[in-house]
Picture 1 (spheres, rainbow, N blue to C red):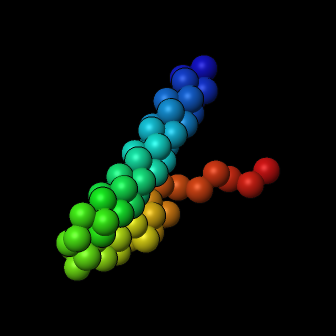
Picture 2 (tube, helix red, strand yellow):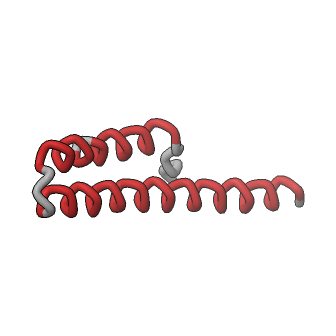
Picture 3 (cartoon, rainbow, N blue to C red):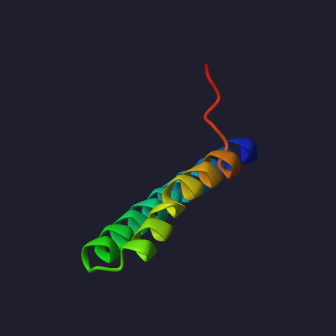
Length: 68
C-alpha cells in the first residue's frame, strides 16, 4: 500500500518538475522576444539562448516515463 502511495507522490513531483521546466522555458522565450522588439537585440539573443539550455536541463534532471 505505501509503495503505491509513494509512486503517486513521485509521479506528482515529476509532473510538477516538468511543468516548471516548461514554464521557465516559455518565460525565457517571452522575455527574449520582448527584449528583441524593445530594441535590445543583444540581450534578446542572450536570453533566447537560455531556452534550449533550460529544456536540456529538464531532460537531464526529470526522469523519463518507463516504457510499458
